[in-house]
Amino acid sequence: MLEERLKAAGIHPLCFWLRAEEDLRLPEYKGALFRGGFGAYFRAAVCRTGAEKCAGCAELASCPYSLVFETPVAPERFALLRKYPHAPHPFVMTPPVDSRREIPRGEEFVIDITLIGPGVEHLPHFIGAIAAMGRGGKYGGRFRIARVDCASGLVFDGKTGRLEGKPAAWLPGERGRARRATLHFVTPLSLRWKGEYQEAPDFRAVAHGLLGRIHVLSAL
Image 1: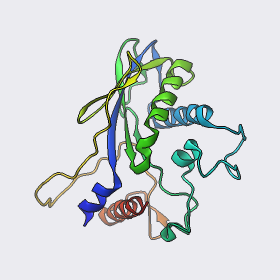
Image 2: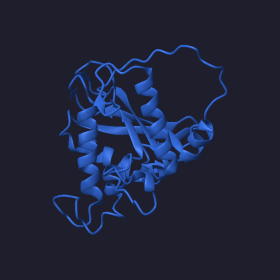
Image 3: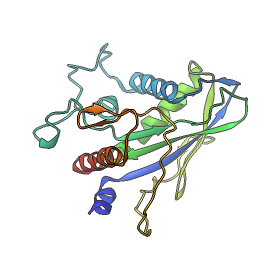
C-alpha cells in the first residue's frame, strides 16, 4: 500500500551541478540562502501582474510561482486539506550540507532538488530561476549551471542550454525488513507531534510526520 502511494506520487530526484564563476562566500547553513534566492528569481521570472503580494492575486490558481511556492488548497477537490492554508510544496531542495563557507572559483558543488507530482512540469522554471540567481551574484557570488542529471543520465546540459531528457521517477526498491535505523538531522527541522513542536523527536513523531506527508502528497 505504501509503495503504491509512493509510486503514484511521481518522485523525481535531480542533481543540479553548479560551477563557481568566482570565489563564493556562503553561510554555514546554506539552505535559507539558496531557497530564498531561488524563490525570488522564480517569482520575478513568472509573475504576470507585478503584485507586491500573492494573496488575493487573480492569477493565483494558475501562476507557476503560486503552484510551486504557495501551493493553494482547493478544498472542493481535496477535502482532507480543508484545515490547511497551503498544500505541501511539490519540491524539496537540499543545499550543500557541509560547513565550509567558501567555494573557490571553478569548483563544482551540487544542490539536490526533488520534484514531486506536477512539480516536474515546472522543471524549465527551476532551471531558469537557478541560472538567473547564479548570473545575478547577489547570493554569495556568481555561478552557473554545469549540468542537471538524474539516475537515468543527463537531463540538462549547461553548455548548450538544452533539455536532454526526461527526469527518471524514483521507485521503491526491494529490500529486506529493517529492525534498526539511525537518523542524522543535518539541517534545521520543524516537526510537531500531538500539537507540540518537538526538540528531540522520537520514532513515532518522525514516522507520523512522514506517513502524513505521503498521504497528502499521494492524494494531490
